[in-house]
Amino acid sequence: MRLIASRGGPLALPAVGVACIAVVHAFFVATQRSIELAGGRTNVGALDFAEQIRLSFAIVWRIGILMFATSCTVLAAGCGSLAPLFMLGLDGMAFDQLTDPGKFWSAAIAALILLMIVDAECNDGAVSLFRAAKALARRSLWIGSAMVALGLVYIVLGWGQGYVRGAIWSFWQTSSSSQQIKNLIYFVFIFSFATLRLWVTLLILTYGLKQSYIRGASASGASSARP
Image (cartoon, rainbow, N blue to C red; front, side, top):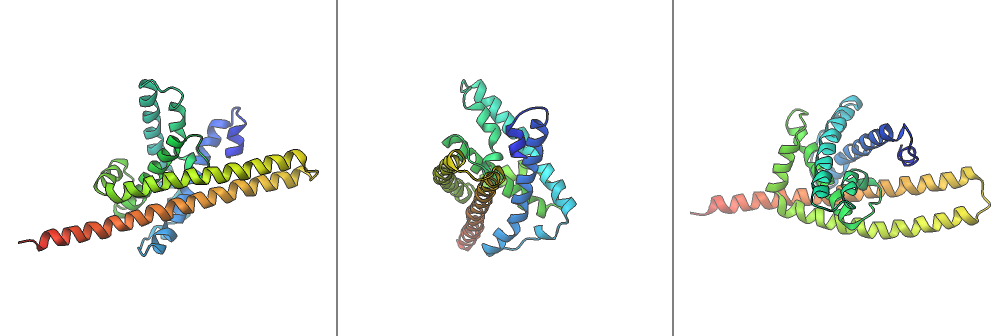
């Protein structure tokens, strides 16, 4: 879908929408395993496919409004060249963002999506961006630190991805292999880095989320123990 969108035309906008839902759904599916690896428990994986798609769509349109509002704000602030990049927050979770600020923006979007998923599980599947934002504010120390770390990791991944992309481009220009082989290599390149990015994103953010619960519980216990 991302390849279709990049070619433009009448199918570009629908392809972008489908691609965003697909990215969030992949994020959704991987969330359970990531939380379990961090030592937590979740019933996200118990949801059927239709319910997962419903929740993914509910998350996408809310995040879409947030990205649009942020882009308009950046545009109004006189940063017209950066404004469109803030519409790529979802895209940057799985694919390389063009700028460093965009990479940190994608990290923030990923954190909000994770908190929305966790919150929805606690509220009978009801998705709320506002509750997720409040949770982010409450857990800003650890989640914020995880977001910064994730943004830095995105930058490093971008360097590595750029190097591999250049090697593939050189291969395309010089190799006598068939077009099918070239397309397959490019597909594997895109899919591999997208998968890597999603897993790295979740592992870093779930670690930060876990620490926010642990440290928060410790702080509450220490506070209640005071005379």
